Amino acid sequence: MCEITTKWGPSEWSGIIQAVGAIIASIFLFLTFRSQKRSEKLMKESAEIDKRAKRGEYLPEIKLEILTFYPTISDGFGGAKIRKYNGEITTIEIKIIFNKNSVQILDFEFLQLEKYIQYEIYPFPLDRNKILLSGEAFELKFSINLQNYFDLVNDQDLDDFNSIIESNFIDYESRIYLKNKLFFADMLGNKYEFRFNVSDLKTLYYSELIMVD
Image (cartoon, rainbow, N blue to C red; front, side):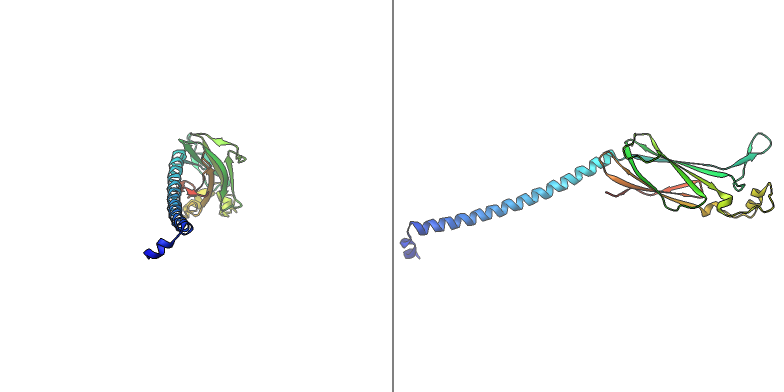
């Protein structure tokens, strides 16, 4: 081996040095690439953590209110008696109040549009340029003619038809379940789906927020 190396000239040594240099450079490039990949991964993880933190900062606090108004008649003593099934309108008013942060209302879906159930929303029409500031609400009002909805026919035109219906002890209201979806965005542009349902005309149920984008 010593004899061979002693016979090498400048060109052979130059080639060996270049080869060793190339190996060292390749190792350096590999280590640099791996370091960059690790840095990119850490940056992505850090960005995601930062994004979630900011999302939490801009997420509104949601408060819900529901009021139900039944048709009434005078009781003759200055008060009123509820008459749900006398052919007049029962209304359910819902407020979804966005506290702490502003939101942009994107869309609303009532999932079971039926003949005798009408609804109105505020703000209407939905304008994607409109921002609900902190403390403002998305409002929804359902109007239902319970007599028509349940096909309760007053053949004899009885004045106290409502009492006859209630004397049957049939809980008609429990058969009504109003399913709804509200889509909104926070001020960072994160989009959410918020589901809420009305049971027996006066009980409000809602699910957790779902990220949709």
